[in-house]
Image (cartoon, rainbow, N blue to C red):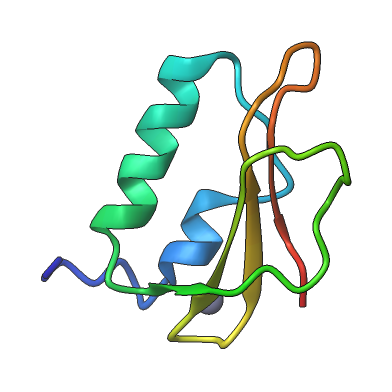
Length: 85
Ligand SMILES: [Zn+2]
């Protein structure tokens, strides 16, 4: 989809981690990046970040096989994007 190869840098490396979100706009923009990327494939959540029912999704990077978690904000918790494995 994206034809400019920035020295082969993977999408998951460009996004950086861990990170949180400054608000819903920030979170929604980040989700849009994930969904627009060809690198991330949805995966089942094996062990949730928290047990209070936050919306959480896991993705596997098709380039490096790293698994990432995305947890939606629930103020004052600012959400989370981090590598799981
Ligand atoms: Zn990767």
